[in-house]
Amino acid sequence: MAEEHGTIRFQFADKGERQISPPVDMHTSRISTGALAVPTGEKLRALPNNPQVQIAGARLIMGFISDASDTIESEESDCEIDVLVLDGRNRIVGSETIKLEAMTGFKPSDSVDIVCTANTHQRVAYKDAPEGHKYMLNPQGKTRVFLGDDT
Image (cartoon, rainbow, N blue to C red; front, side, top):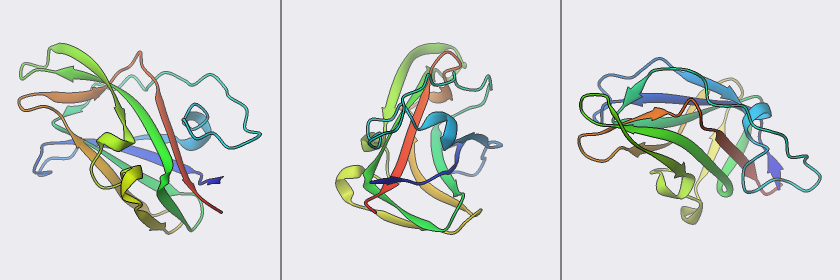
């Protein structure tokens, strides 16, 4: 299994994606080592906390900007994204760790391949917050993303 390197891009939107937030970017060199599918010989390092951004939306969208042209495979990938759950008044009502299997568009069980072109944004998956709620990256939480292929 090989890890694909690049920038993971998170954006928040309404469920119809008419209004999309500015991106929150994190490079895999900082957030992939804690993923569940760590390649043999890879050292586990402490992951940084999520960025201190106050952006929320009813839909969390995950994208990828690959450092090189390659393919990412859902069955070789995983993620854990720590988010806060906000109510309609933007009050924190809980927290959640979103796994790749719970997202739409790139579930490991669906065996989806995405062909990536170097330095080009590629949509990967999204997750909708419960009705009447929003997601926000948990600033005290961590994000672990591993995008891989079987070569």
